[in-house]
Image (cartoon, rainbow, N blue to C red; front, side, top):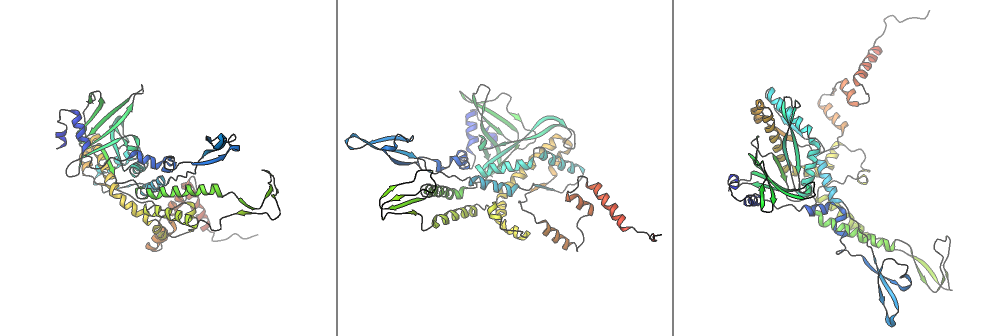
Length: 488
């Protein structure tokens, strides 16, 4: 069934059912992703799977213990013991969020370059307009936002739409400005791309909820094709087309860019993270019970020191002994498992450990060593480019189509101009090594002018005036008199 045949159905509910049926990929588990990203929602805080401890207390302590919930009646009807619930340690780690942050930083830590070979002034105008549109929507932050949503819940989309506003910002007079909106399951949107038999997206839909001024929720379903924009609202009788729709789409393309990946970034290590949290929580419980010093006494004790007294002693009968209890063997197995789990989490997700403790001992390392250090993270970026190269290229094509509509004289040049976005993985640069490499390639000659180097140093508020002063001082130092004055 073609997309045109879908919209010929008489029943609007049948139309929307068909639009929802051709996703081709399962719906993401947004609730599960949010649960994994929020440490306080981790499994270690689930009191069913990790209940608090039930601790017995004596009758003498019942009146003083506010947490006592039940009293056990002993033989002869005398109340002897009770119990209270002792909270167990619950340690959650936000490793899922850290994995996403590192992945976003490495893929979009540097701005995306737009490579294009322009032919003529018109194509140069198109390229400048595309760059200005991306600048206006703050594409550096937009890229990071899109990547964070895809890494966190496997999919995200962006809608480009024009708003009426006369301007000359794009290098020509225009009645419109181009804006962008982000759709994500983490923002409450349910996304439905519709693919044909060849795998091309021929329609894009989303379902969302809006709350009006009276606090009443309204559920909407909208669809974009290359020709029209549809909007339905769910009423008592099913889906009703909203008044004023469908609206025509002028650019002849679906104005939506959609990106997805198969799993969230931490999918392969979720079990390891849960094990690490459980291990740390259990170890914290052990410390709570055994970290404070305990005294083992042999013989009869006649009296103890009072709480808060310094230099007090324990008084005992003849032959009584007392000594501190301590672990003879440190819990090396626990330490080894914690270190192993952390290492495997970082390794499997290709996430470099760049915490302060991990890098403080590295010292000054060369540029080649830096590249080797972050090679795994850069290989991960290369894997993600399978998604984002296509995503960014689709975005550029949509923007070019709008530029051609804003200025019809540029429509042909906008179609002909090829712009290729290029992702550069983030890397700490060794400036000295780079300068040495290119100076050697340049035969030992300077790479930049003295004036430019003075500007790049950023040590002066007015580098041009400061450079002129340096030139004047240099000229004075180089000048001399042929006949030096002599003393009388």
